[in-house]
Image (cartoon, rainbow, N blue to C red; front, side, top):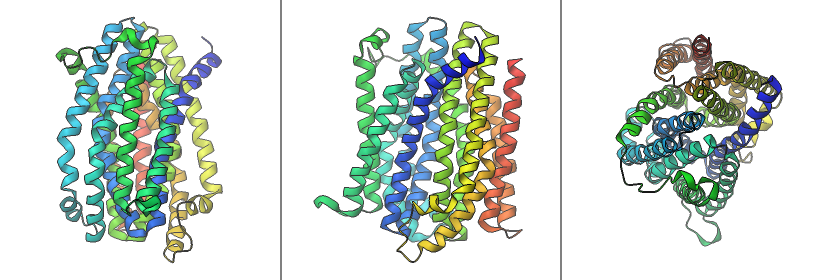
Length: 444
């Protein structure tokens, strides 16, 4: 198979995934923009609440992400029964996890106060998380179904459902954050209700599609759903836990940076949230390509074709590098207009947020290449079912190198928020280098 064929198949599979990840990110961006129009304190609370929800979600999503290479590998071996077993147990584990973690959302205020957050911001953030936490189970099951459908090359439906979710999110936000159309004005809590509504809608649509589409009925995904399959559950658990903890290591680094930014000030935290949302948008491009690489590498791994596996991996890495270069160019050439999109410039505090956010977005350009390469390496490693060692490499890079660098640069050395972000760059560079080395060492 030629490089051009690999590139075409990677993009055919990956572009809808890129689109769906961008649309998923657009949900968070619309929340940030619309709550930012409502007020700075509400924005800071939603930044904290949404990022905290995301950290908990990332750990549980490891089971869903494990389903993707497992299903792709089973298809490579023509084992349709294993496809059903792995996906079903991924759903079981996701439901159990979502129920277990809900108390963290209900009692989130004392946790945020213990971490040094502003009491007013912490109180609003708790109101937000108590509602948003109800959406954890549907959000995780949606992710399992997305992985299942993507591994079956049914990526178009994932994209269209996510785009519909963005539209629903905007409508419900407009009604409930500001009290339009006769609805109560709920502020940050209205944004949380919109998030839960979107997750439930997505779950219903994807489940019906997976169950009713004639081409997928042969998998009998929900037939005797209540019956446990302990062997398959163990496989999903063993592969999924390291994936979730790897996501926790990275996401936790960014959450820790948000907490430290909160120590600096509310304006700085709001600017940090905006700049991080923009950086996360471009990151979603790499996540989609990484998922495509996972599926293709897992399929070749199931077939035992190591030559095609390495060739597919090389092409995916080159495509991701091109995306990173384009992101750097955009960040450096249009920083101020991008940050301004998130603010109501008529409000007096917006000028300070705009100025600080513009600086942070310039720093974000520094880690685009490293961020893209580390997520691509993780996707490739998942394709060959290597998750435990990458978990260790990520934890060392983010927590023993990145976070200490951020703290030292921000506070003892006095560089503030800029120093904090430079520390993130150091952690991401270490992660990308070590994870890429790990994959190509295994691929030999």
